Image (cartoon, rainbow, N blue to C red; front, side):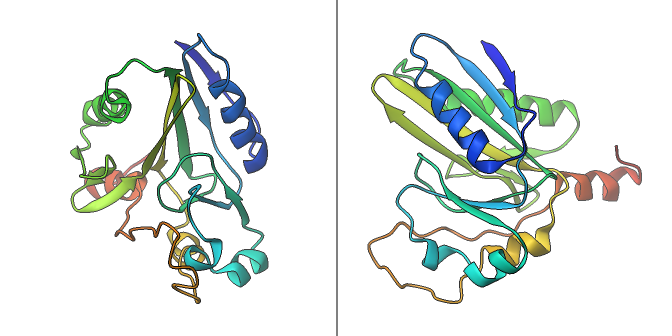
Length: 192
C-alpha cells in the first residue's frame, strides 16, 4: 500500500487529490491529510439542510461536497482525515479498513468500538464518521478522527437554521462527539 501524506490544508486540494488517487487503477493508497476549517457534505445532501451557511461565512469555514455519500462532517487542524483507496475486492471495504484504525486506538488504550453506521465510538461519544464510494472497479473508504477539534465550531457549523428545505436529500444523523485528546487528558492528565 502506498502511503500519501498531504502537506496542504486546503480542503478543495485534498478532496481533489483524494479523487485523483481514486482514479489511479491498480494502486492501493492510504491518504492522510488535515484541512483548514471546513464542512464536507455528502454527495446526496442539501447544504441548506445541513449547514449554518451564515456562521460558516462569518467564521471563514469552507463548505465543500465530497464524492461519497453519508453525512456532513467538520474538519479543522485538530482533525485527522484518512482515506483507504483500492481496486474493488468484493469484501466489505469499511469493515476491512476500520480494523487497523481500531487496533491503533486500542494499542493506545483507548476503548473504542465500531458503531452500526461503521463509525467509531468512545464511551458513548462519536470520534470518527466514515463514508464509502465505489465506482468503476475502485473503492474508497474515508473517515475523520476527532483528536483536538474545535467542537463549538463543529456544533455551530453543522446546525442548520433552515432544516428540511429539501426533503429528497440525505440527512445527517447528529451524534454526541468528543475529542480523543479530551479523553486522554481526563484519563492521564497529560496529553501530547
